[in-house]
Amino acid sequence: MSAPIRASTPQSGKMKKDASFLGKLRGTLVRRKKSREVTELQEEGKNAINATPQPPSTDLLPGDTLLEENAERTMLDPVSRENPGFRELQRALIDWINSELQEERIIVKDLEEDLYDGQVLQKLFEKLSGQKLHVAEVTQSEIGQKQKLQMVLEALNELLRPQGWAIEWSVDSIHSKNLLAIVCLLVSLATHFQAATRLPERVCVQVVVMKKRDGVLQTSQVTKELTTTTEIMMGRFERDAFDTLLDHAPDKLNVVKKSLITFVNKHLNKLNLEVTELESQFADGVYLVLLMGLLEDYFVPLYHFFLTPETFEQKVHNVSFAFELMQDRGLKKPKARPEDVVNLNLKATLRVLYNLFSNYKNPE
Image (tube, rainbow, N blue to C red):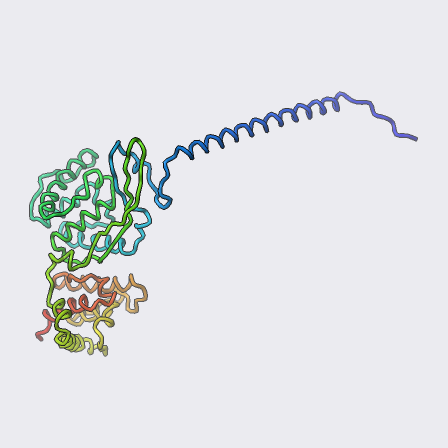
């Protein structure tokens, strides 16, 4: 017996009609989507043709590209921010500023964030030059900060320009936290005022130069040397006896080294320690810290320094801490940088030890 044939119901007719309607709607949406994709693709191609190419390695911020016609601006290539030499230069400048402004209870941690408003630069100028600037001590408004910064930079420029320094900074660049401009200013000041610190040598960075010509932003990259050699930069820094000994009298240098070794061993032997190589055995700062404790007859708590330093940073910490102990005793801050001692720089180590020898050679 054959199965009964079911008659078409209103429900099934409605489903067919709905399916037909959805099919047409889907086709319409697909055509619109394809049309929109074509339009977007054409627009993207047009933009790509009209766009001004930018250096692929440079991440420009929107504010950096707002230039007037024929204006020019320079900024640090973001890649150079991670340059080890540049980072070391920033640390040296920060340490120098904090040392100079210690009595003002000013502590700089970040050059961009702490110097842009002119407050620290004012105090630094007054400390270095001995001149008092009659400006508002603290101002929060942008206009007030720029007015103060203008007066501070004018005073600094009056000192530096006659000596042949290129003025590579402005109120706008400093206030906008342009790190390149801030570092250039500080290097000029440190060199001009014979800072009691040694800046890292041959520090170079990549600089992005932006110009606007005929409404088009043009960019290029150049290499800028921020520091040269210590002799050239600080040729204003006097050459000392150790420079002369190393250059012209190596035989006499050996006599000085033997005297210093005898001096340090006289004290370190109390801890059953002995030095045979000055530059290598003082490089991690441990013997230098212990020596200061012995010279001043006090125990240095072990939690203040790394007894077995492994990293470069830990060694720099130790040498820096030893320098602090020297300054607490009333000795002048060594001109050598902690990094130089850690890097086995013989002249730097000799300068530090000779400073101690000069102050402690006579028994009490």
